[in-house]
Length: 122
Image (tube, rainbow, N blue to C red; front, top):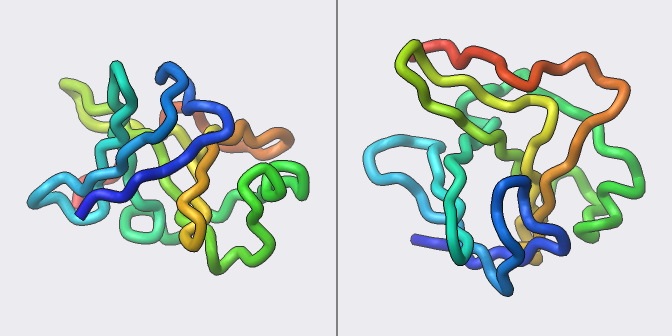
């Protein structure tokens, strides 16, 4: 089941589009493809793959997507598959307001998080 998302500012690497589509990747729990008009990003559900990952958004960042309750946030990280394994970007998560389907990719300032963290194999 795909979900149509609205981004006030498109995620890095994607051109502006009226709607982005988030689709689960079949056979891979917690892995999604985010499609824009001309490109796609692979995103991992942090709740499934990185349960200890708990970045902090500023009030301004949360307001960008209308997020007032952390329970309404779907936290995703960009996954970069490579020959030696998969890395994830923990410094710039994609956060989706689960009730409104509005999302944004935020750069987390003053948080010691890596841009390319190796994803442990399961």
